[in-house]
Image (tube, rainbow, N blue to C red):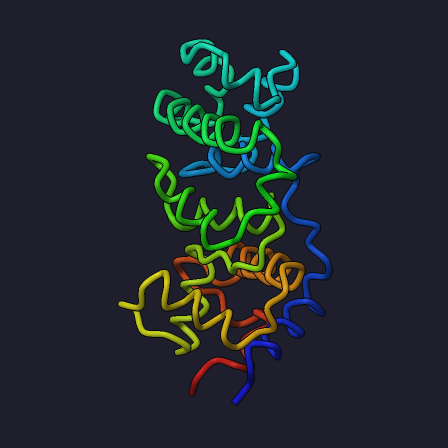
Length: 213
């Protein structure tokens, strides 16, 4: 039976390096992780572009900014009122807990950071883990819709498996390495978008040889 490391090698050969997450700074990655909920990445890029244009992509500036102005800046990301509240809450946590420093946050213990992020209204496991992995370099595997599809269709997990159970599977079967988790999750997104769609396109998928009979 193929291992999850075999899956990684197969995907790497097919897609090549993914260079994900597309953010210039750890703080930009945090902002993107909050804004990307329920929207396409191209819309997030427009919203982040607005923040850059108005020189607002800074934790202290966003912390002080009124919510209405923030809503207008991030409008392209959709659900802008809801996301403005979530982003303000995440930024408040960063500023009040770590003085706005992503470097200081990265020095905190992973489990404690995750617990604190999950306490922020509107931040669930996937967003919290995206911040931990991509912005703070913590070795936590991000589970999303694409990963769920691959794991269920290849019978690694059942359809009722929880987020935490899938994450534990990935982390128990792979070395505890942030760079590996980063690239592996990005490859899951790539195969999910191109082949493992709601209507599966298995014929040309690089993982087809590993499909259960």
